[in-house]
Image (cartoon, rainbow, N blue to C red; front, side, top):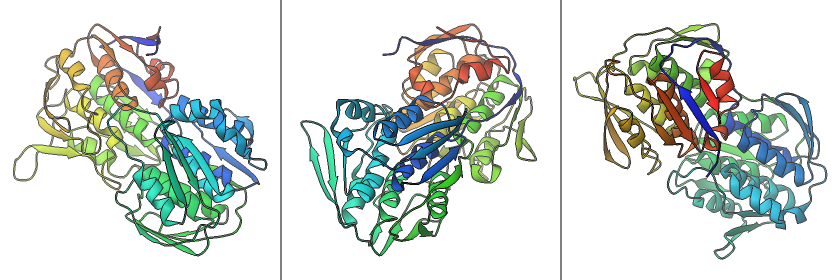
Length: 436
C-alpha cells in the first residue's frame, strides 16, 4: 500500500481550460511496436504517467536506445535488443507491475522468435484473462508454455504463418498483441471479432506507416498481409478519452464551466452522448469541448418512460473505463439510472465509499448499481477512503472535489498510474488538492 495520499477540501466551483494528456492505452500499445524495427521511431504526446514510464524503462533496459526530444516526445531505436535481459530479475519485477507489458509478447515473438513474460500486474478489478492473447499467437504457429510455479509465460515460434482466426472476445490488448505478431508473419492473417477502439486504429495506422499492410482498420474484421521488414516512422498519440470523460463528469458534479482543449472529437465515439443522457450539456467549439456551469442536470429516461440503463460494451459502445465516473456523475443528477458494468466483476465495489459520502446507491450485485440522483439537494460529505483502481480512484477524487468538508484518499499511486500530475492540473482550475 502506498503512503502517498491526497487531501481534498471540496465544495468549490472550478473554472478554466484543461488540456487532456496523451492516451494511456494507446501509448502502451505503440511503445511495444517500436521493437518491430531497427530504425528510429519518434512518438509524440506520450503521457508521463507511472505505467507508461515503467514500460519505457523496460524497453530501454531491453537495449532500445531511448532519447527524450521534448517533454512528451521521444525517439526509440531498437537496433540491439538484448534477449538475455528477459531472464533478469529487473524484467520480472517491472513487467509484473503493469498489465500493458503483456503486449511486448507479440513484437518479441515477431522479431526474436521467442518471448518470456511473467504474469502481468495492474488493477485489482477481478479476473482479466490472457487466453485470447495466447490462443491468437498459437493460431499463428507459436508454442506456448505456462510455468505455474514461477508464474511465467514462454512463447516460441520462428516461422509464424498467417491464418484466419475468430477471437473469443474482442480484447483490446489481445487484438494488439496478435496484430504486433502478425504484421511480420508469412502470408495473410484475418482477425474477426477484433477490437476496433481508436487505440487499435492508431496502432494499425502507425504500423502501416512503418510498412505493414493492414486493412479493415476501424472495423472488427482486420486483414494483415505479412511483410519481411518494417521501417521507422513518426506517430502522434491521441488525447486520452478517459481523461476527457473524467473532466466532463467533474464539471457537472461541481457545477463548473470547463473548457477541455483539443479533444479529437471524432475519436470520442459515444462518450459525449452518454454524458448528455445524464443531462450534462456541452458545446463543441473547433475541437474544444466546453462544459457550461449547470446547477442541475436531469437524467433521460427511455422512450417508454422506463429507467435509463448505462452499460459498457466493446467499441463503438461505451468504454468500461468510464463507468465509475458516470456512476459518480449520476449521483448528483435529477432522476435515476441503472449502471451495468459487464466486463469486470469488482469494478463497482468502490460505491460503498460514495454511500458513506451520502450518495443514494443500491449495489444490486457485483455488476449492477442503481443510482438515485440527489439533484444537488444534498451535497456529498468528505470522508477518508482508499483508491482501489485507477478509474475508481479518479471517480472518488471527483466526488471529493464536489463534497463539502475534507476528504483523504489513500493509495493514490493507483491514480498516478493513469493520470499525469492530476492534482497540479486540477488545482489550476481552482480545486484544493494537497499531496501528502
